[in-house]
Image 1 (cartoon, helix red, strand yellow):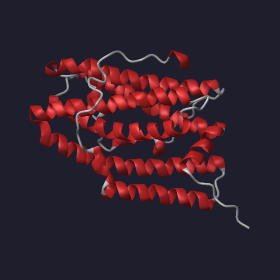
Image 2 (cartoon, rainbow, N blue to C red):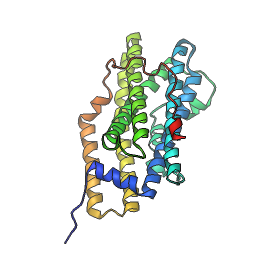
Image 3 (cartoon, one colour):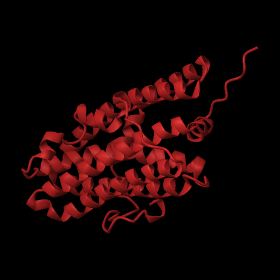
Image 4 (cartoon, helix red, strand yellow):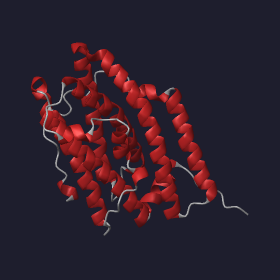
Length: 267
């Protein structure tokens, strides 16, 4: 007799968090992505064109938040006596985004030439799409693990920051739209959203496959998860992408107008 497959978002997350090897992979992937985001924002802040220098502290704050998130995930590993693992190429969401032209090219960020205003608009549009994903994912984790003894505080802090990042992108893009960049913003948002949903699907499948091997998931469970990932992609390709390209003035105004909050409790 077959054992019924237990499958819900909560149960899958709980399995991943309860097993040291899957938890190690989860935190390593997250920490790597946050560290890359921190570096990218730091370089953009340093290269902001003179006409937009007032934006540089907010971009730097964004980067400082991402660096902080990376340290938090490393601290969670350390607390369980675990070391990070090398992130598999096909699970590296941030690197794959850059490879497919989402975000400013690293060659440009490694140079010392100032960026153009169009570069900043592109950066903000790409961030608006990826921060939508980050905000939604952290809210999902917050829903399930707000009271978790190990990761609850981390999830609350990171979720708050991601919501701030998304608000900042909306506000700044609306400012640039009023300045005459509206058509470029909408084109970039649409192009980025369609690319992001494909990469998110591919990374989700790759992560699921590795977690399945670590946790010895039965074939039926892997198939159900695969079907769910493809179903989400189908929805996002048809209509879900629209949530990533709309712009509205956020309730949180000037969300990145101050210094980044410290994460001393995770040190």
